[in-house]
Image (tube, rainbow, N blue to C red; front, side, top):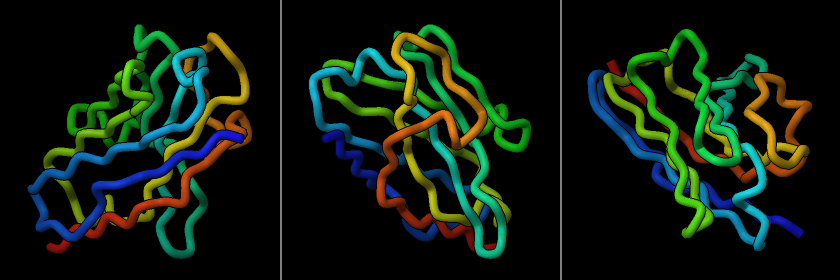
Length: 126
């Protein structure tokens, strides 16, 4: 059983920064792409950023390009999301997820992921 535990969320003013972490259990973390998603009240869960299993490719939603950076440390079984220049519209619960397929790049669809963390709240005040 794989467990994903997010941390690093909180309340920040617009223009500020936060760094989210997602620690994964299990010995096969390095074989899977990882993704960050977010869900705001009344909205569908949406892709934010993804990183392929090797870290060789990253993908971002247009809304966060140039502001957010995803990275991973396979030795620590951890994926990160550095969020800069935060905006009130970034307010949401942020989830990390593990791809259901080994040795792939990240997918934009939530259906491509089989394990999810419990989520961490990010609130950006104006």
